[in-house]
Amino acid sequence: MPPLKVSYLKNVPPIQKELKLSSVRFLQILDEQGNCNEKIKPKISESTLREWYKLMVLTRKTDEKLFVLQRQGRISTFAQVKGQEASQIGSVGALQKEDWIVQAFRETAAMLMRGVPPKNIMAYYGGDGRGSVYPEGTNMLPIAIPVGSQIPHAVGIAWGMKLKKEKNVCLVYFGDGATSEGDFHEAMNFAGVFQLPCIFVCQNNQWAISVPRARQTASASIAQKAVAYGFEGIQVDGNDVFAVYAATQQAVQKARVGKGPTLIECYTYRLADHTTSDDAKRYRDEKEVAAWIKKDPLVRFKKYLEKKKIWNTKYEEAIQKEIEGIVERNVQEYENMGVPPVEYLFNHMYKEMPPALKEQLAYIKQFERKKE
Image (tube, rainbow, N blue to C red):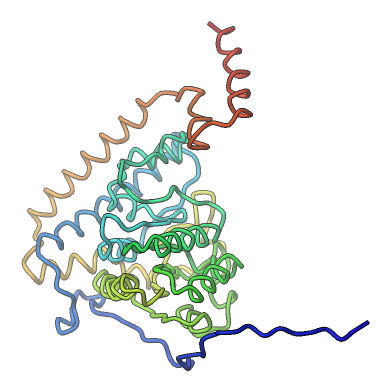
């Protein structure tokens, strides 16, 4: 047998940069007492600050109502977002309407900020597929339950944007548990190789269900994992809406001009159970939870607004009343939706229904006619 001939690739460009593993930056602008480093705080209008606070309250109230609905048997299992509101509001705040968001299953704040009504979230967890049909132009993929599976989808969207020479970006959310999945590493590698406009936002809430972050990786941080794939990673205080916004804003600016992806690790905490089917008291120390309650992003932001004389008791009472009304109206709208027609199970699978599904739909509808 003749020796194997090896053909080397021609015209391969030389490596233009040398990556050095160094300590990852940690960014905090707003501390637990509401004290703000105004020197590095990004410029944000008072109207935007008010909007963000209102969205935080809406998220918390929606979260609480969903919990009640689940306990009453009016929806099924769902994952609370309590404690992670700043990680989502700060990051979505740095995006433009044309940018895309790919979510996991704890992104209530991101959905609400993107204009998805609370009734859609209720419907989704109530088993109604219509909950995943968002208002036109929302540019957000539906909830993804399998851990980490949504990350390659975001990279695919970002790749499409680059091929079409669009200046938009795609931001994807996932938890620390997803970084233990192959999907995460494959997506990061692909994004790094092709310098895609993708922003990876890891909401490191310290627990992958009952597995603590320390048992998932020996890395000093999750953010430093980006170095292996050739791009920047940064760790931010995930309960500091200003730090999250600033880091995402910088990442977005880089991505828009073709400088590739960024991994943002939002160091935060899951104040509730993993889902309503979980009991975190079986594996978490109550002292740990109590310590993180003091870092509550909603309380922290309120303290800041109070110091700036934007927040006061009268303002809070008005916001609470308005939000409670919004949430209750959405509960009524959700429960008045009724049962969707059987066609709905088929109409949204493909742009054009293939013959096999048309045949199945016709088969099911004959039983409907018999009932009549």
